[in-house]
Amino acid sequence: MSLASELGDRFKAEFMGRAVSVISGAILIIVLARLLDPDGYGLLFLAISVLGTIQLISKLGIAKSAARYISKYKESDPDQIPHIIKFSFILNIGSILIVCILLLIGHNFLADLIGEPDLAPLLVLGVFFVAFATLATYVRLIFQGFEAIKPAGALQAIDRGLRAVLAIGFVILGYGAVGALVGYIVAHTAAAALGLGFLYFRFYRGFSPSGIEVGLRRRIAEYTVPLTATSTARIIDKRVDTILVGVFIGPIGVAYYTLSRQIIEFIVTPIEALGFTLSPTYESEKVKGNTDIAARIYEEALTHGLMLYIPAAAGLILVSEPLIYIVFGEEYAGAVPVLQILGIYAVLQSVKVLTDNGLDFLGRARERAIAKSVAAVLNLIFNIILIPRIGVIGAAVATVITDAMYTIVNVYIMHTEIKIQIIHLVRQVSVILTITLIMSIVVYSTNGFLDGFISLFVMVGVGVVTWFILVTSTGLLNTKKVYSKLT
Image (cartoon, rainbow, N blue to C red; front, side):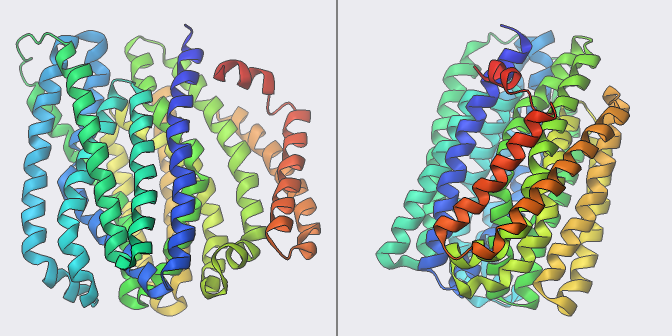
């Protein structure tokens, strides 16, 4: 099987897993937004933001470091694989235990510090959330290191699908935000248990370990440092802004901001699946001496990503107001300007997810960590300055500015590693921008007819059809080529 066919198969598996995530996640946020008032919705996701930040310490970049060395040694010395898995798992269990004990002791203090005493019971449950979410993430990343994208995608689908069913079910039964969080925990637990079992029987027992290579444990531990720094910065970028919105504005502001970010996260799911699939391939091709192949794979992925997400962002900006009003209700009207600003963030994400994870596998985690740390500190400063002055919109503005800086640096680092054809990419982006302009004019002209679900779908459909005609007629999208790689 050719490399393109293999990548196509892996992408399909990961995409299917994420497709289940998108559908179940969309159902989850729509139903929760309808069942919970904005304060309850905001409180739930404020708790999840706090727990996601705490989870950083329980992960510590351990799984990603192990995945990187698995990707490297499965080609050169597969007998080292059991040692990598065993050492990284024990290390991760230790970090989980420390974090969970500290959270159990300090949950009341943390709730008081944020200024939301109602968070305390959610943070107690958060001990289980942190433990099992970390283990589920560990398994997925180890699978990624093996380029075993099918089980990784299945794990994602199980986790997110169960989350939607259980969280909605507990809320319907009258358990409110606490019940929704329990649904998250049970889903993480099931995914972690299934994933660890599959990892043990399919991979760990499949190798006959020789003696461990001298210094291997030290190198795995050392590589967790830049990865942890990057994760810390990513959490500051992704979670702390939500917490600051909660501190300065309260749960209702968190509801507006979280809802907008969740919509963006759903939109970028396909490109995240592609980034997850391709990242270990860059290192595998580099080890084989095929740097040019890695560069062409990256360029093609980036072109197709921008071809999809620049027009999608423009369309989202145009339909954001009717989308929020029709789908979520007028009580979430405050999310409209936030969603419009974060439309730009969707484009940046499409570039970032194809680049940053790949840099970790290429051994450039240190440089990425520095860039991410600087961006995160700036994001924190901008949030503290802007949120008190212009409200939740300030958090969105801060995110877009700092993410743009970080994305540009990431692409530059990738260029130094695999030599991207910059001029070619600039020409492609120029064509994409022209297509986006034409599509936007067509979509905007239908805006006055929008008054319900059906007209919203028609408006989106008009935009998609216009986009498809333009990208195929200009040769930007070769449907036969894409179809052949995915079948």
